[in-house]
Image 1 (tube, rainbow, N blue to C red):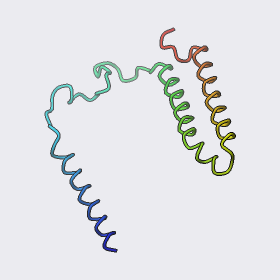
Image 2 (tube, helix red, strand yellow):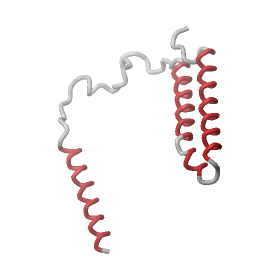
Image 3 (spheres, rainbow, N blue to C red):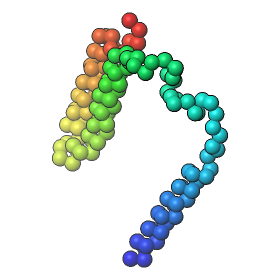
Image 4 (spheres, one colour):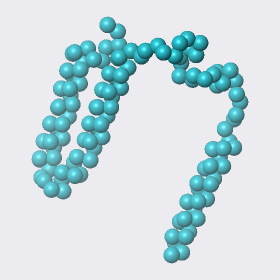
Length: 117
């Protein structure tokens, strides 16, 4: 029980110190660029109803798709090696990577990764 209280006290102290440092250490020097309502690079004097290019959405969806596939690929060897042989794990992982490569080649050849027409 004493070790639990000690660890809890250390955690509370570290969190408190981090909160203190985060609040008091940064320099708060406002300037014209920081006080603008938009810090994302868009001109705040133009209309806010300018539509985005469809390319932004396409690239974002492609990024999420391939990022999700890679995130699913990382735990594959551990999860399958418990039940199956190492050869099967290597085969499934290689098939997964080859399928991702074919998807990337298809998107590249169909022009999904081009910014300009």
